[in-house]
Length: 472
Image (cartoon, rainbow, N blue to C red; front, top):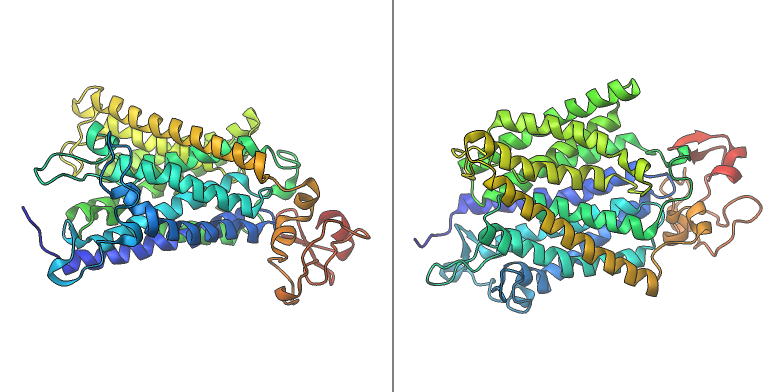
């Protein structure tokens, strides 16, 4: 039946969109804290660069590709149908609606998903990527990968006769992915793996203690902001201020709580210490896992999923050392693995009385739903990995993707952005661009070297001035 605009629902989705947008600066803090002291600004800039670029692309062609009229097979929408959000700008009685909210509000909400998905990928290539090449990748990944996959998973359009015309995964296949376990998490994780393979390992990967997180308070702050924003991510995906939103909200609370416990138990047994870094990572793992399943599981099953995700992801982050790929900030171990676990778990524990209405194996549904979830998960994984790999190889062959060894050693903050994160009283604007050589055992600039008796090293600790030549 035709629905009318609901101010309460509209207000909730506007607030949720703001919460999801905050996740990208939160991700910048998380990723920035996880890197070396001489890469923190570059890492944060990759998130902000994605925010700026994808925001423009979304309004021009992205929304149309994701939610425009399907061009056939549930693969992609017409990219020019709503160019510049044309047709969504009417107000009053002519306002086009999605459910009970203006379509323009829906477009803004979904745009924040596109932004954070692209930003997530950057964590796989910390310390060694050219910023310009990253921006080219971000734009191409958004257009060729995220926008089509969002159509597959999130578009449930119907024609005037009520026949489905949306995406092949969500509407055609009938897979359950409430807020983006495949479209966001698996998608970003697969792309991160492709980039890590193309760019190769950092200098000193696995041996240099200087690759430790340089600022753990930043990591904790970033995790907290992400968790805060994730309530808008999951509960806002109900597109209404209703019981479904409340159901998703509760599960978004308890799953990461349980995941923190699972991760810390692994750390304690394996390493002898439960760490703040582990707590932050566990929370993210739980949030990733509950994203697709937050309206399919009861709170008790959400706790079980979160606990399992914390354990599995804590173990998975070590795979990069075993197999030799340098996933710098664990995009693969947390987002790809967590997304796969959370999406497949629906096939086991989906409660038919929950809002999503799926019937998992544990509720007598057999293996049908698990098979559907697996098709959705591994289709997105394969597509994202393949296209991302091709984009990255093309950029490497044309623009070059990785900085030189000399630039990497000096630090990408200084060599790419002519800035340092911690100037120790020296104004950042005085830093001159780096021109390629480190002279007289110190950085060749007059505002970025960490002098006056202190230098950042080995994860951010302050060392005596004589250590500057060897460790800046």
